[in-house]
Amino acid sequence: MTSHIRLDDLLGRTVRDAQGRVVGRIYDMRGEQRSGELVIVEYHLGAAALLQSLGLSLLTLVGRDLPEPRKVPWDQMDISDPEHPVMRAGGEARGNSPKTSAG
Image 1 (cartoon, rainbow, N blue to C red):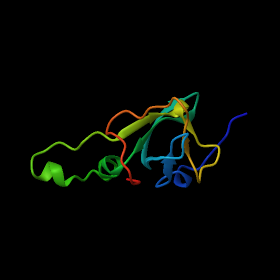
Image 2: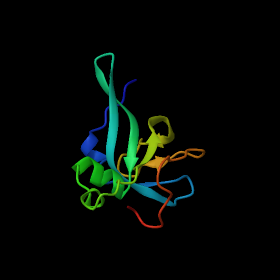
Image 3: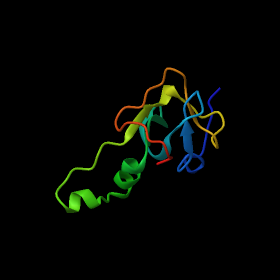
């Protein structure tokens, strides 16, 4: 059975790990077209993802590169409850290191 979730329901949601620690907020997603459907393949978390999705960076204005957003592959994210996404046990976000606050 195919499950459909509105992307708007995920944007800005705080992601926690299996132990309940905040990993970051979903600010962007990367999708691919497969068999005529758009399929999310990666979630981008944190402030860098927000700035990247806006195409805006104060760092680039002063000649510095924007840090990479934290990236979580689709199969490491449990979105069965879109209001409370959870990075699965064993999941690992690539990119910026974890922060203590949602970001």
